[in-house]
Length: 354
Image (cartoon, rainbow, N blue to C red; front, side):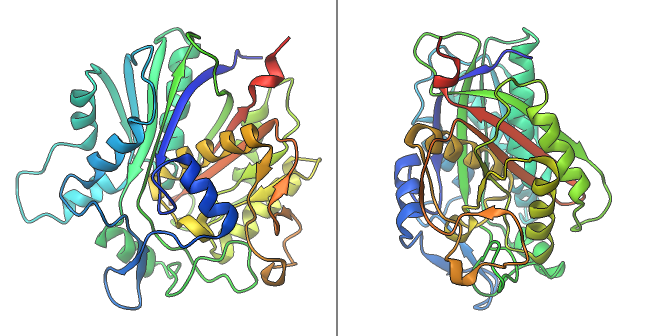
C-alpha cells in the first residue's frame, strides 16, 4: 500500500458560496445559489459568480480559494486543472492572448515549478493525482493542486451542440433529467509529505483513464476501472460514500450507477452536488474532493434529489435525504469529453490514528 498523502488545507468558491462552509450549507438546505444569468440566450442558463466580470475572473476566483488555505509549508510546485482558460483564448479578438492563468498564479505565490492540465471536466482531478505522485515519488515535499473554470460562450455552445445542455435545471439521477448546466467554480488543496500541523484528511489513491472512444458517450467499464484503480492496495478500502460526476444527462447518470454497482459490493451512498452548484467543468474534481473532506469531518452527506423525482431504474444508493452517518472513506468521480475518467480516494484522519 502506498503511503497516504497529507491534505493540510482546502479552499473553494462555488455558485453556492465563497468557501466550503457556505457551499455546504447551500447543499444541505437547498438554498438559492448565485444568480442564474442568461448567457447566450434567454433559454440557455448558467451559474455565474456575478462579482467577477473582468478578464481576470479566473485569477480572482482562484486567488479567493487559495487564500482560504494556510500555505505552510510553502508549496514548491503548482498543479492546476482548467479547461475554460483555453476556451477564453478562442473568444478574444486580439492576436496577443493573455497569459495562462497558471503563470499569474505562480507569480502571485512565488512558485517556480508548475504544471497545467486540460483534461476536459477531469482537469483538476488529473492535477491532484499528479501532485500526489510528485510527493509519493519524493520529487516534491509540498504541492498546491486544484482547478478553476468559468462559463464561456464556447463551452455552452459545445455542450448545446452535443444536445446535452439543459434549458431548465440540472437534475442528477432524476427521472426528468435532461442535461447539464454549467457553472463557475474554483478549488485548491495543499498536499504535503510534511506534517507541521494535523492534516484535515488524507489522499489515498487515484484512478485515471482515457478511452478516446466517443465525444460524449460513456462506458461503465471505464468508470469501473478508475474506481478499482483508486482503491487498489488500500487496507481501508470500504467506501462509505461517493461524490459522483452526476451531470444530469441521460447517459452519465446511468453509466455511473451501473459502474458503481459492478465495482463496489457494499452499496455506498451516492450524491451529486450539481443540482445546486451546477457543473464547474475542469474544477469539478477538486470541488468534489473538498466536499468529500467536509462529509468525512462532519459525518454528514447532502441529498442529491427528493425521492419523488428519483429515477428508480437506477439501482445505486442515491441520497434522497441529508444523512448523518460515519463517512471514513470517500470517492470523488469526475469525467470528461472524449472518454476521460478519474476517481480519487479521500480518507479521514481517524483511520490512521494508532
